[in-house]
Every structure is written in structure tokens, then in C-alpha cells.
Length: 553
Image (cartoon, rainbow, N blue to C red; front, side, top):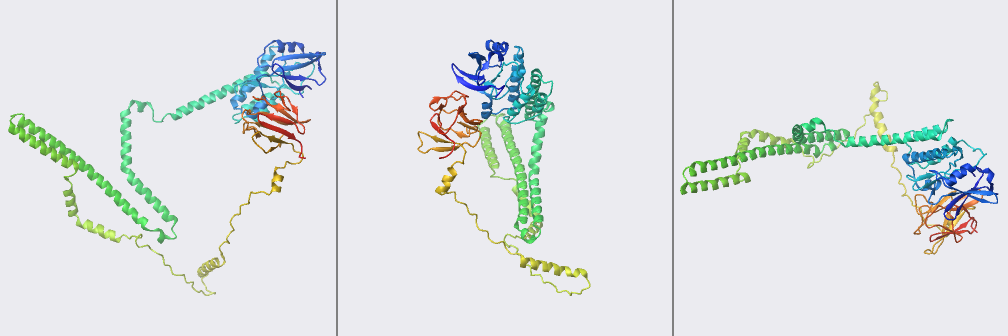
């Protein structure tokens, strides 16, 4: 109870939250100046007040139509740091606006059940509940009440970053705490958050810009292109050598790691490396020869074209006669055929040189063939190590040399290892336990515990009833699997539809302002009003009918 007042909800031309005393609150207990301000003035971030008087007893009613309770929104939504500071800023702004209408900051109900939000939790408008009672001092200071509210809100923050929350909590604990000071601190934190986000976005933009985009690169694009071409050329030239060196290093590492069985590891792979080197060298030579032959082909074709042009210039153009025309035509055809045969490779001008080069060095070829013969091919003739069994020499027990006993010690240790080391015993395969349950076990598992309340859910489409154990103090039924403890599958259920909670007087049911409402014993429930649950109480959510039970008969 807040200020010793009871709370209830009614639905009459809207939804109202009622605050009063069990036996009625006298009019003299109210601050009528503040009450008239709340009744006749639309104060920002404040719930509109309506006084209902019966036999000189008044009840305070606050309009909460189309507004959601903060405590229930925190169960279904999460807060970011910006939304958290923005929510506190609206609360501080509301208290500052109330000061202009002679409202005291200590008389606000800073609790999640008395703060309402119109809209979503991130961008909605906050409405505060002000209690215009005079004579009674609040049980705690304003800063302590706000500190307790902040601790509740922190549980719904997705990620706590920075020192802003610590600064707010520290300021709420100071003696000089004021809503105006809190408002300034929150505005500063929001500004720092915006500047930090801008810096992050600027850093991301700068990081996305390539580092080579400088003024020199923009002014001298030709030089940059030449350097790039030079790099590509160098990479193409040195790439085969790098590959060869990397492969050599890998082979060396492999041989070092497996140094013990060196005869087996030194297989045909080490000799294939030489063949790969030869193939790479031959490819380089072929590429060089091809480049030379292609350049010679180009020069030959250009020479043919130049010769044909000179023939037409000096023979036919100087004396245009049919004879010279025929000669120039035949020469043009012959030169064209010659150029085509050279370009297509039918005629080669480097083969003789190669033959001469091979004939000049017959010794080199003989030496290369003899070297190939010397190279072993372990792939064809695999090497098998045949190591004879080591004979342990017999050493005299009383020998003078102290080191002479080392071989015997090593041999004895090897014999002990072979004699005492036994292979592990075979382990039986893992046996999977069967998940099948006996009928008695199934009944025992589905049977709720003693003195634990549960629900029986019946549906029009299902023949068997479903048992739902209420194993929490706050049990939510709704459509969202992320928030609700039981998911209502009927079409038309709200994200958070209803809540069953435990109060000092027992279990109560509340409709969380759902879209299609909840039926309690056949009557429509008033949102946020607490309905007591007893044995056999029935309530309905769309198609699902729930029966409350305290214990199994």
C-alpha cells in the first residue's frame, strides 16, 4: 500500500485507477488546491484526476485509458541505454512541470505500478501519478524512491555501458538532489551518447575509406598506375620461386618432425620436388621462347606488309600497267600466305637454333641423363628398414667403468616396458537409457507437487485437458514465447494477455489490457484489476478455458 491507500480499477466510460481507504477517505485529508489543479488543468506528464464523493468520503480516480502500466511493459520489452535515460528524463521533466502548478516532488508515486506510458516503452509518453494528500510525510526521500525505481529499470536494460547509471545513482543519493539537477545530468548523458555515436559513425566512415586515397594519389594517377603494374609484374616473376621456397620449407619441417623414422619419411615426395622444379624451369623457358617467337612473328608480318607496300609504290604506281598489276597482286597473295603460315605456327624460325644448341652440348645431355639415373625413385622401389634386433652385451658386474652399465639399464627398461605395458581393456559401448516411461511414472511426472497450484486448460479442438503448473510468483499467459511462461495458441491472444500472481491474500488474476480481453467466471475482466482465484475458478482467454486448482483431489 502506498500512503496507506488501496488500489482498484473500474471500467466506466473508460478505465480508471481508484485510490482510497478501506473505510473511505475524508475530504479534509486532501489538499484541495493541488486536487483542483490536477482536475481542471492538463498538466504535462500527469494523469488526470477525478474525485468521487459519497457521504463525505472521497475516492481518487485516475484516467488510464489507452495507457500501459510500466511494470507490465518491462516484462514484455527491453530498454537500451538511450531509452533508459530518456524515460528518466521524462519523469524528471514531469516533476519539474508539476512544480509550476504547486505540486510537491515528494508526493509522486514513483513505482512501476503507478507510472503509465502511452505508446511503446522506447518512444511513448510517460504519465505520473500524483497523490494530493496533506499532512502525511513520505516514508522515504525523493532520491531514494527514484533510486529504487532505477534499480527496477536496470533489470530490463539490454547492455549496461559507460558510467552514466553510476552517476545517476550517486546523484540520487546526495542530499542536494533536485528534479532540476537530475534533468540536467540526464540531458548531459544523452548529449554524450549522441556525440559518442557520431564519433563511432565518423570512425566507421573514415575506416571505410581506402588508405591510399591521398592527395598525391589523386594528383598523380599515372604514376600510381605504373607502380601497380610494376608490382604485378614483380609478383608474377617471383611467384614460382616463392612457391618453390615455401614447398622446400614445408618439406624440411615435415622431415624434421618425423626425424626418427627417417628412412620411411624420405620417400618419393622429396624426389618429386626436383621434378617440379624442373617442370617449372621448363615452363619458364617455354614462356621465354614463346615470347621471343611471338615478337619475331610480329616483326616478320610487319616486314611483309612494308615490302608489299613498297612493291605497289615503286612498281605499279610509277607505271600503272597490267603486267605490274599482276606482279603486285601475286606478290601480295604470296606475302599474305607467308604471314598466315608464320602467325599460325606452320613455319617456325627458332627450331633450328634449338637443334644447334642441343647438338653443341652433347655432354650436358649425357650428364643430365646420368644424373637422372643416379636419382632414386622410392615410389617404385620402396625402402623397407630391416633393423636387426639389438644384442645386449653382457657386462661384468664388477667392471671398473661406471658408464658401462648404461646400455644394460636401457635394455632392461625396454624389456620392462614391453613386459608390463598391457593394452587397455575394451570398454563396453555407451548404453542409451530408454525414455519410455511406465504408466505409473508418467502419472507421477504429470502429477503436480503437493500444495502447488496448477491450471487445467481445455480447448474446443483438443479432447484431453492440459495441466499447467504455476511454479512462479508471477506467471504470464500470452502469445509471446519470449515473455510468457505459457504460450496461448489461440488466434487473437495478446503478446502478454493475463498474469497470475501471488499476493498476501492468495493468488490473483489480472488482465494486462489485452486486445480481446479475458472472461472471468463468464464476465469481462477490467484491465489491471485483481480478481481472486479459488478452487474451481474458471477464466477464458479466446478459445482456451482455464480452471484453477490448489491441490489435486
